Length: 299
Image (cartoon, rainbow, N blue to C red; front, side, top):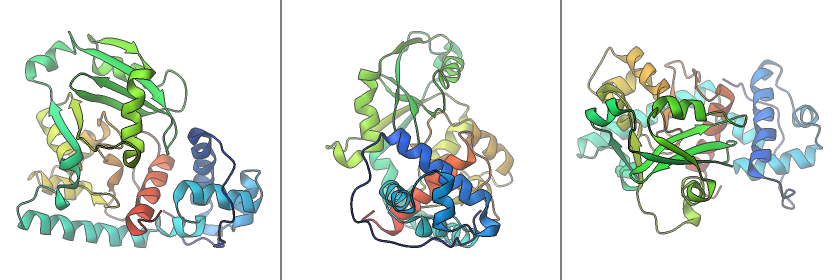
């Protein structure tokens, strides 16, 4: 995790140049990785800007436009101390929610994401008779391959190169009919990554293929609200399987729907990030981005 960085907080005076979301993320991801890797030396704003071959002013504007907060503020959300505070807060919120009979904090995710698991017969059939349309779209965290069926979203994978993610999709649904159709998946991608721009907010349906244990874990992850953090042990306790933290980790690693099933919100007991199948740099970006929005809604 990061130590506090010596980055300055300067106001925005104009919007950054119009570039694609994917390009924005590529630059910001490089900046976050640089800051994480050089935490011990506490690089300043000028050093981070030089690493990206940008002026300090341009880097500050670009980063703040993407994150909603300055680089200095963003880094504060990624410290071990802040992570531990968020872990404690999340436990308190979930305990309170359980005490009043809710499955999650205010049923935040139940309202907008529903999860259906395929039947045992469908599981064995490997997707036979299922039509899956997929496309690659920009997101705040880089390009994402989105796969949808008539019954809901069956795959969401962040990708760093063309063709990445399709192999996993074919492995998960070997006998399904796959069709590249970005026009069909674009409205769904818009709802996922820009929910406020696409009313009405109908529930997003997910169709997943997994063991009973995996599905239990994925349902538990849906209870984690924006800005929340949990440990593998927390999730194991949530599904009433104490002692299964390692199995929980395996189930989290098999999550087929990134972001919507928020496996990125599970970290180590120490407050360290832990692994992430789509890259720890991306996980840091997602956690900082969410923390900024949870703490400063105007972002």
